[in-house]
Image 1 (cartoon, rainbow, N blue to C red):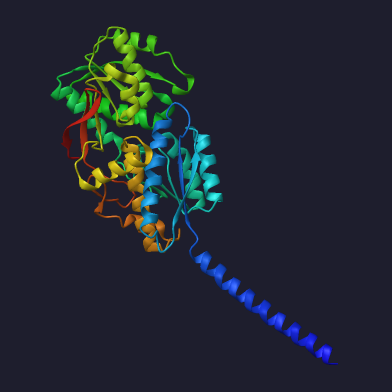
Image 2: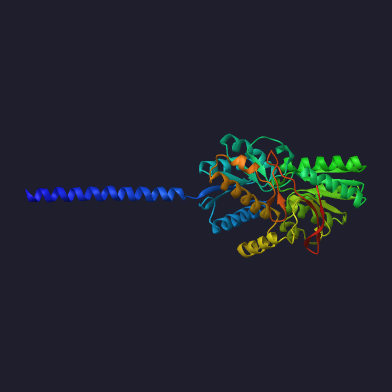
Length: 386
């Protein structure tokens, strides 16, 4: 009898302990769930001919995440950055975003080129996930009530400014152009804006060539044909690598025409692969690589220490994009719900080189800068207010 009572008592004690342990574990797991990371995606080209743009963007985003987490995270939770390679193709962009959405990200930082963003926006809209691009500047995504936001200004403004500089400041009245048709939403709209302004001023377009960067083109015959039109200058609208290769080809053929390019080419790759061929080339873009703003200098130093190389516009804008996203997530408590509205409240945000304001459609207007290659470096010639 006593043995049975003792056994029952021990069983009772074990049940109490089990219930207590279960409750403790439940409370513990609940607390962990409350501190689970906020997942944010990054999608850009990390391999291939134009990987410098995506790699720099990823690095800038990663540095921003590390900075935010070191400061306590967002709403008491750390950010976890999930990275995907969009392979620099529309199909790759859609696949990358679907993977990130399936993984539960609250937003995606990307894409880095206009063509990939154009392909990705329908996927983001359908899933109700914010797509915040550091570098997409096509006007085809302007003025739309969707889930697409950006921290770079529309490139048509830069194209028109460049056209005025070429025609008025340099007195060059005949121009030829070569552009990459694989990123047509960027290159063709940039060219259309430039040509429209240039012709309106009295300039003449004497040569126009396009190429597919995916087909590893031979630039020699293309450059030779453009040279035969006897232009006063050549405009190149392509990635940094292709811009450098085209510039090399013009100089190897003995053609010393002035060169101009778009902001897409403003990375170290154009300097490393272009060498003397890109000396004197001018670009108009919305980023000043030589800014002496304290925030920019601090970012440059930390980026150099973290990645062993200098940052570019892609890394700077990706860094800013993550900071803006984090500020909006702070308002939503780290949740995706309400995020578009919180982003639209971005007014006078202190970026690396100035303030950032988003309009009602998630577009931004920023100061433009005239940049030239001098002695193997990008030199800022002047600021150009929009």
